[in-house]
Image (cartoon, rainbow, N blue to C red; front, top):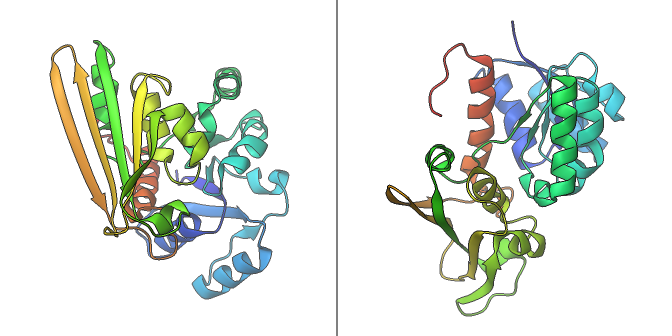
Length: 260
């Protein structure tokens, strides 16, 4: 049975998902798309020659959908998630930084249990999430993450290379909400946002988005380094984050799952 999805947000990731469905990279049906910029959605629908509904509200978005993909913003997660889950739709969240609010996260989790739905969080722009989830079943002693980006991707003026944040992942996500959703994913898979150490470096000499993760646990350690080209449309987002969303949707819809 083909997965029926609706999408919130028609920016970099949302439009990439639509193009992937159009080009048969992703086998699913797009039912509806919701975006504040209705003209942009209409233009994309014409360009792709697709027949999805342009939703004006959440009720229109969730109608006839199995799953909603949030690809808009942390504000959209906070505004729409509870209503989507209460309706009986599962939800994929790309702006995972919104879930660092424990009270909000627990509220959504309770709705999932009561309504028998799920929240899906793709790995995004990092590798190693499977290893973190497995190591957590023993004991993880420490998780540290370093993110390096060009100042433009951090909305900072060009300057010399410098550390712009060092501390807990929780505070770093609040200071740079559009840039370090990966830190939220790493924290949730591992030892939590307050125990995960985060360093953010602004470096005008690089164009890649670089993420390094170092994990110590009872039976060893592992290091992961990702150098990702930023999306052409949005330098804050790595292209692999959009591919991660597609991989997650394929995992949901296909009969065989690979990985933890």
